[in-house]
Amino acid sequence: MVEIIRMGGLTLEFLHDKESTGESLDMFRMTVQPNARMPVPHYHESWDETVYGLSGTLKFRVDGHDVPLEPGQSVFIRRGVVHGFSNETQEPATCLSVLTPGVLGAAYFREVAGLIAAGVPDPARMTEVMLRYGLVPVPPGG
Image (cartoon, rainbow, N blue to C red; front, side, top):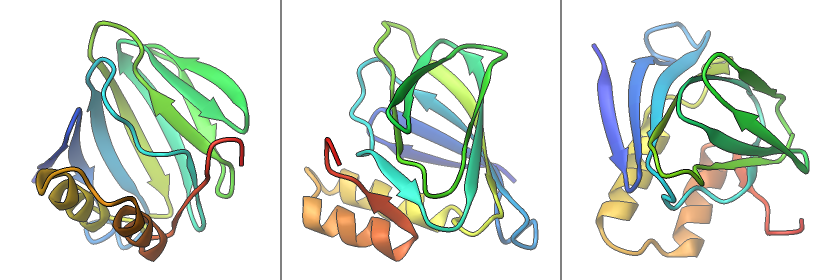
């Protein structure tokens, strides 16, 4: 069963998660609205991420390099590599994300969605949630 999680300008449709795959992978379709507020640059401590473009164009910043992600293209982000993304176009962009192994799950996104729904999230609280789930925020220029 698909679980849909909305976080501001992001919509995630969880297709598989760590619970349903025995921690083999997490897989979700992500739609990013134009100029939506995005997560801070970060890296993952214990999983790799592969992102495949489905529609529109996302701009990923991976290890200091801009990588446009258009339909049919993919980007691989190894654990420990700082990255972030944005949609600087005027159209929504959609991609498929696969995290291996599946150690994050949907719980992280549910918690972040709750913080966003409660109003402007406290940066310290957001950082605490990220760190608890193995995402390490990196300050600009860091």
